[in-house]
Amino acid sequence: HPFSREILAAPLPASFQEINLIFDGLSDPSRHVRAFENMSVLHGYSDPVSCRAFLSTLRGGALDWFHQLTPGSIRDFEDFAGQLINQYSSAVAQEKTYLTLMAMRQGEKESLRKYVARYNQVCLEVPTAGDEVKAGGLIRSLRPGPCRTSLAKTPARTYDEVLKRCKKYINLEETEAEFAKLEVIVKPEQKKGKTSSPRRGSPRKNSPRGGSFKRSSPRRDGQNSFREKREDRWQGRPRLPN
Image (tube, rainbow, N blue to C red; front, top):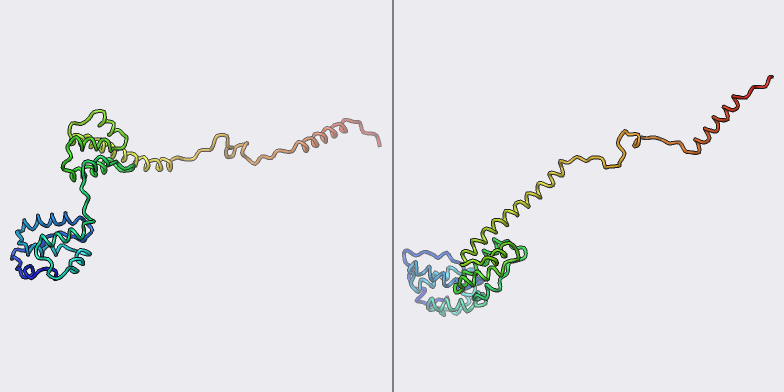
């Protein structure tokens, strides 16, 4: 076993409670160690108990790594935590600075609410950034629009004031989005209710123009007229006696 004999022999206290933390090697090991240390102080763990409790938080690849260590190589919690951090140092989150804030930009299709939440989360990870840096960074990183224009014309004095003013435009943006959805739903319903009317200039039903009316050809008309005239002419002549 990677633990020393002293760690394995140390008894667990009667009030022992497992810490509800998990590390599988895919997250920042330094953060996991800090979170565990805070909980171990709260529960009053001794160093040997901390080692055994810390082992119970490992999962997946991290647990496989532990069991590949040299037997008896871990003698205290500091050694255990140090080896874990060294093994998974590639997963250590890069420290964020005010330059991180200056490089942020709102996505082309990212809503104002989501972007402000994302920007504010990064601000929490840069405790050294002052109000002026955070406020200026947010204004510059917004997409061109009403919110950015308002903040640029009338600068806010504090970062909290910037967030409050952004909140108004967040509500406006979401209200307009709801109206747009309603228009999409209502328009098809209006189209269904409309009745089709005959097009202008098209023949109406049962009208003389649209009926089955047959026109005689000019040639036939001329022949009929000639016959009528010929008959009239012969009828007007006196008949010869027999």
